[in-house]
Image (cartoon, rainbow over all chains, first blue to last red; front, side, top):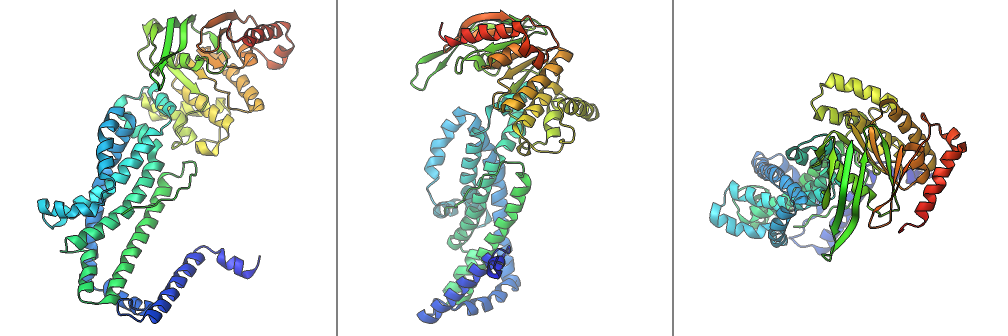
Length: 263
Length: 253
């Protein structure tokens, strides 16, 4: 093995290298373009501490994350059981599928103006739109997972005398869990996207508001720095979720899948 | 005891036609008997077992177990499936103890029983393994232990050794026989292996190809406990195998 190969095979080195490459490209592009709307990477990085150590912007970020967490948790509680029951009952699936198919392609942020008309620009509207954004992928993955449950697992439990009402949580949920977790992962990406876009529409508080305020004031380095902060939050949430997912589904046969969120 | 009376089953195909799977099956299995249901693939023999299990409803006719009509699954009939159907999120211990806890057996007593069973199926030391870490033969041992754990009066075995390699299959057949010869449960054993059926059974129910009808019922009059190596030299055993093989050669008739 040559030394370069061994360096590249160290965990964490390839991502650091790609990050470095991105920063170099950015720096070059900013130099070449020389426009105000594309500040250099070094200037943007220098603007990061002003966001990360500013109590005001931290409160905004905290407010965003709080809304996201509540919207996400309520989606978990509603969407997973809904999807699981759909997967086990043709009647329920037949009723809900057309409705879901209708809402699915609508960007959830596009519902924001209507929701604002009804519920105002406050927290409730934003949490509702996050809830909607997270729910759909979660329902679909839970539905797919519940449909794919091996009937013989259910039969085995029935033969042990398990009553019907306990099956959904005792057998269907754990069987479908790997698929449900994929839905959660898409859901986290969706929650982040919808969170920011809802705050850009209902500009009252939050990271999205922070972003647009700096844009209004032509503080372009802060705009880019805010985008970096949002990206970092997404990255951290995904990494955290992956740890949880591995803990909960370590028993599953390995099945690697690419997860792509849609905004 | 199981009493199957003029049982028929048809499935609705995608195009909406009725496709007969089982036609007019009547057989009764006395308590403590090991009955094999033998037939070519697709003859509906597994369906027959699912109906006795209460997992699938019959189209007409009746199935009674211990004098009561079957209306659904119950712990008096323990299934063992070809695909093992273990709970993948539970360890070996967790799988085997599941039915006991489900039935409200106190944990301590349940644990004692599980330890005994895992010993009986040679899985001592594998308590904390998960199904994905086990070979096919080990998974099926876990599945058998899991079903034996809640002590069903009847075992419903659906080609339990069908997906195992020849050597593992032989080993598990021997183990099943030695377990069965101890407590003599009623067994309904679905298979397409003639030698397996003759080796294990008191009686063999031979079915025609699709739709499955009764073709022959053959009593296997061979001494127990049966030892495979002795049996293979036994003239009567060989004759049973040849007789049934011949029946199977013409699947329709």
